[in-house]
Structure formats: C-alpha cells, structure tokens
Length: 164
Image 1 (cartoon, helix red, strand yellow):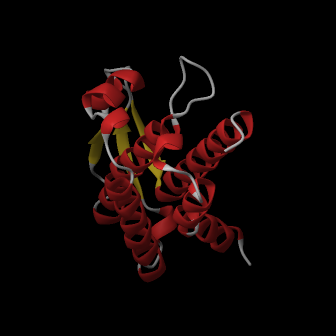
Image 2: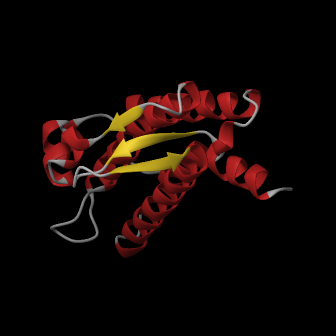
Image 3: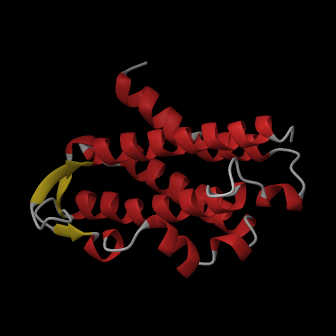
C-alpha cells in the first residue's frame, strides 16, 4: 500500500473511528468534559464535523482551480470557543453532525479516487497575517486526518477519566 493509499484509508475510515469512540455512550455522557474548562464530548463532535466541512470546501476549491484563492480569515478572526458558542455546540444533537461528517468524508474520498492527480492539486490560502500560502490537497487531507485522530484521543481520555 502506498503512502497515499494509507492516508486515504485513514481519512475514509475517520467517521467509523469517531463513531467507535462514541459507542455505547448515553446522551448525558456526551456532556462530560475532561476538565471544567475543556470541551465536552458533544462539543468535540460538532467541532470535528464543522472543521471537516470547512476544509472540504478548500479541497474542492483546489480540485476545481489551483489558481484560486481561498480564505478562512472570517473563521480565524474568532477563537474556537466563540465559534462553539455561536454554533451552539453544547446544545445540539450529535447525529446530524455525524451524518455530515460521514457524507463529507465519503464525498471527498470519491473525488480523490476519481480525479487523476488530485493529491498534487493545491489552492492558495490567505493566512491570518494576510500572506498567501499554497496548500495541497494532500496537506489538507493529512491535517484533517490528524485533527480527527487527536480529538478521538481527547474523547478516549474523557471516557477513561469518567469511566464511561
């Protein structure tokens, strides 16, 4: 298996891994956090799904036109906690976010399977300091794969601490 095949496999299996991390949790357990000032499991799930949704648009922009300029400045202007409040992470059911996450990963995986040269395509991203940086599809997929894996570790740590 090539590195790209292994990466795509990890990326594609992400929703199953997240759902496995949530297996057998009661609804109330989703509102448990590791510490009083950290995110709950519910908030982590919404954060992962929303982040993946945002970055899937970057992947699609790169696949569609590598000369394009993509900006997340509107998003980076606020801290993550503010987005969590604005998008009501604490009060929403997780299933719609899990469904969005599953659909996005399947959609992007299909594109990567079908498009020749997809991994090398890139888009320019405007960084918070105004600089522009070429970011490849591979880099975004790697980043989102690692992002999920880190948050699955967070969920596992919460479960362990609270015997869930």
